Image (cartoon, one colour):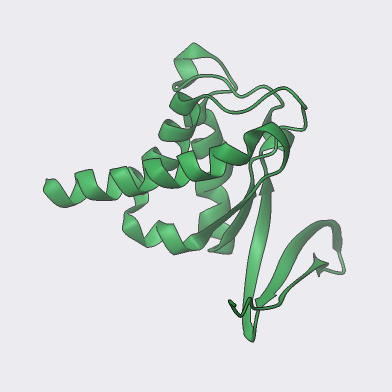
Length: 143
């Protein structure tokens, strides 16, 4: 029988003057992690293709407008890939450009900075996003 650690998560405001901005404070067992939440559904409910030239809801736009600024400001993120739609998941090209591109730009150090969650039709998107991040690390090592 496996001993599964207890996971605790609470939502708390960043400060008293910004009640609309909050962070997720998580504990896995005794390890405590602070993660700033990023919600894909706040960016779009219909993720598009790879590049901004293909539309405003692209993986490139998500990376440049949401992910990179949040990593610079908060350091570690809790990325929720739920689109808010019961029928919509992310296209592979969106995930590759957003998350593989993030690794190509910021390096392998970004891997532990991202924790993913998702419910609904996008649950496989978490696995796919991580896959593209590791592929970008492998490609970077070969150069």
